[in-house]
Length: 138
Image (cartoon, rainbow, N blue to C red):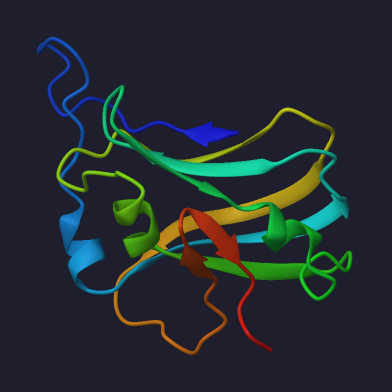
């Protein structure tokens, strides 16, 4: 599943992307509401792209297999944009602000995909290390 931003200038060649660095510099997060209906059978990746081959990809599997977040109820998932920057996203030219993929079976109902500006520390935000996301501390 992915969302792709429209070209800023449809007459120009290629996808120019959008400068969304203000979200990053404010300490923002990628947020979405989701309910895990069936646990993933393979790794789940999430990405923010900045014009091929520019992208920041993270392993999000642990978010959807966590007993607390994968309990069959709807939850708000929050991922720091800084994690995507560390993985390679250039926030000055975003063309795909949300992408979630897996090679295996996975049932997920989600809504309200959004970027939230501002500091969200301590508010149920996932953590990242070496490109791998971990669920927020209880």
